[in-house]
Image (cartoon, helix red, strand yellow):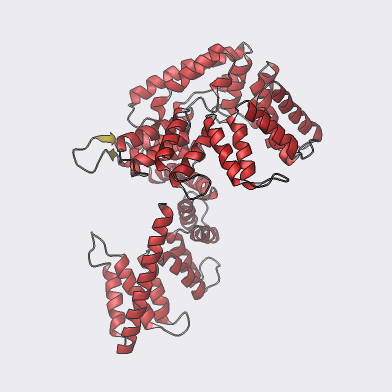
Length: 542
């Protein structure tokens, strides 16, 4: 059934979708998968034309037909490949039960890869009966005996935790990982590094040994270890691995050369920002983002989507080369890809397209569904947007209580707009929330500390009206003055007109003694805000 259900969409197949061609035994399948990886590149290249994308899609369809034909001939690795694609969502409508059955067929056809994965799938799905759990462990043990490195690593993890008749046995786990180390299996060495970095049971925490093993795993060309080491070299901050940005960049390059999408993405960031002594090179940055996106890296797909939405030039000059042309449809395609790779921001941005009716037909219900999924994944902007949908009944049943709950979550997640609106709900006792000027002030101050002028005005108003105790006009003037400062910019050199009027009206009500007190409070708040901004900038850019 999965053979006939397999529908190729270039936007859904950005690489060979989790398949390591080094472990594929079937020569024809291996060459087809390698060809497929090359074919797909236009899918995530923001400069590719629709014609190039169509040609790539047609070629990909032909390559997939080859995989289907091999699977029909009971090629175990081809059956396994289709199982991997079904698990990743590429097979339309495939159920978890069908995925398991596909892996069983592949295992029965002799695929050790399928046997190793099937055992782990059963364990991950939380099999209820002991017999099924033991059978899953046996599959992994059999695959490990056949020399499968992934099964060896998973079996070590089972011994570390104890599972389905396997007693917790750190010594056996270490024995398996050290067996992998002897075979120069970077994944096993990396696991050893992680164990020594925290300490497990009788294994004492040893950061020096952990760092040595990390270097060994990287030397064995295990790309996640290479990326980990590159990051520590680039950023520094620990005794075991001295800061060396130049070596960090080189290690990111080596990880990228191994096909690690995070390595490519980090190089993109480095070239875009000119970090670590590397000269800014926007063209190189987006070449690396594109390669990262070809490896299903959600963050790179999102960055390319943003670039396609706004357009990107090589530099600030008007005549500079355009690296990425603005193209809303391409942006949407990239956001969809990011969403398919579990990016909450990707889902949120696709939701905005449906909300606004840009490129696609306006569909509030689809918009609400996508934004809700992003909100549930923890994206503060999506929480705030979903709250507004509940408040107005946009694409979802109107529910002011649910709106308040989502505004609260956005506020507690640190979103200034959420803090402002939830503060207003607390102040007014809206949506069944108990009115509390003190609680409202707490949220207004959080938003004000992030530079939101309206939150400063609201605080000024609370102090002016005496809702936080005795009326305090000096503090009210201080907050109103900060609101004027926060709303002053290149476009508005004198600040928001309403804030200016409010500040000046308050000033006329102050006595001379209060004016001195107000200016002192204002200078104190301003100095504290400046220090907080400097601390935040230092933390964000180590």
